[in-house]
Each structure stands twice: as C-alpha cells, then as structure tokens.
Image (cartoon, rainbow, N blue to C red; front, side, top):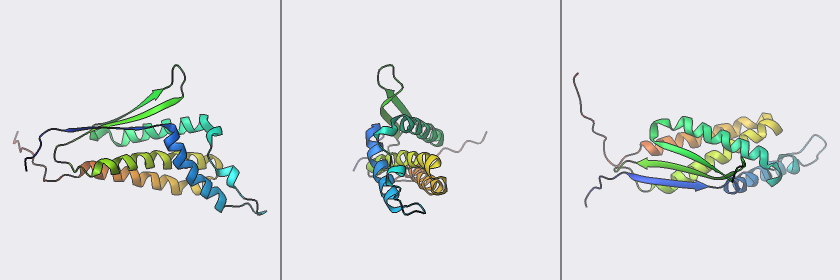
Length: 167
C-alpha cells in the first residue's frame, strides 16, 4: 500500500434551505414541548419558518463569521454566494485542504458537523430573541460541534514529524 503525498481538497456546499429544514425541525419540537403559564402551546412562537427569512439570513452570516474565526489555523474558508445583487444567501461553500495523512472517514463527519454547527448557532440566535433562558443550551451545542470540527481536522494516520532547527 503506497501512501499518497497529495493534499485532499474538499468543498462542502449548503443552502439556507438545508439549514432551515434542520433548524425548523428542532424548534418545532421545542415549541411543541413548551407552554405558557396559561397552558397555551408555544409551537407557533418558537418554530422557525420561511417567514423569518431575513433574520435567518442574518443569523447564518453570523454563524459563518464565527466558524471562519474559529478555523483560521486550519486552511479553511467559508464563502457565501448571494443571489444576484440581493443580500440573500444562495449557497454557503466550505473549502478545506486535508493533509495526505488524514483519515478519509472524517469527510462525511465534517460535512455533518459543519451543517449542525450552523443549524445550532441559528437556533441559539433565534432563541436569544424568543426565549433567552433556553438559548445557552443551543450555544453550547453549537460550540461542541466547532470543537468536534477542530478535533477532526487535527486527526492524522501517523505522527506528524517536524524538522528540528537549532537557530
């Protein structure tokens, strides 16, 4: 078995709809399980929907900025493609270069972690407005995905050997 010495260039793409589908499912369950003191269900109040598009776009941009700042050291870039001249997000592209001795299995896991980070960050930002007492749970969840991403990017099949230079 021959070891490859080429870096692996990887691109992940997400649409705001991909993120919204995940986030609306979670917020719907959250809203259905919560009620007011009068016993009224909070489903409509807490559920994210297409009607909240402007806020969703803003929260996604904040999540992209956050992930870019956290992954600066890992040769990762996230680009947002906008529709025409509008500020509306069409697609989010995450590009990274994996070293040749990285595990191939992390590629799909990275895809899920990035999508989940953006989703949970979106939910956190939404709950800051709607139900601040529960927002911190989703912030912690999003940060666990960021930590998972950095952990995966650090994994190697073999020891990283660096030359030692004495001045």
